[in-house]
Length: 145
Image (cartoon, rainbow, N blue to C red; front, side):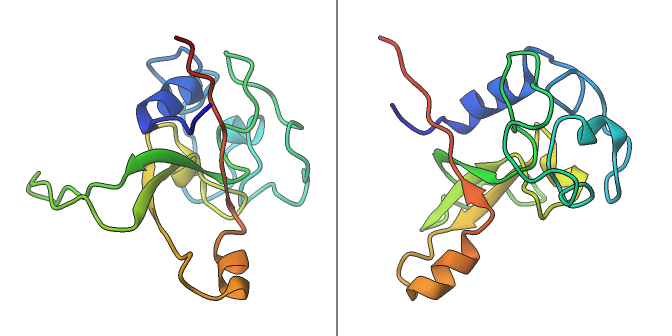
């Protein structure tokens, strides 16, 4: 078992749909406010009060719950920054890729294609870490050989 690579995560999140924003093949309707297509699939900033448990939204086309919203999901890849000119400026030390958005984010951050970085704050105090990581989680994958 391992964390997914960011490419594995995106493949699973898209649910077999090459087009579309969400795992059921639908497209984003609103980037910073309630999105009716996303509301069927995710717990995110604009519907978090209505749903509080994981697995309460619809699955994507692969039968996976909560690939969008809920919590940012750690991937095993280290974050590599590419600047506006397309030049690689990384990898950044103590950073990891997270995908999927969380219950605190707008729809634009819940997209299948959205990649964000997460800093490793493990050197800080315990209370800080609990607050910092409150909307982060992980999903494991089984690598068959």
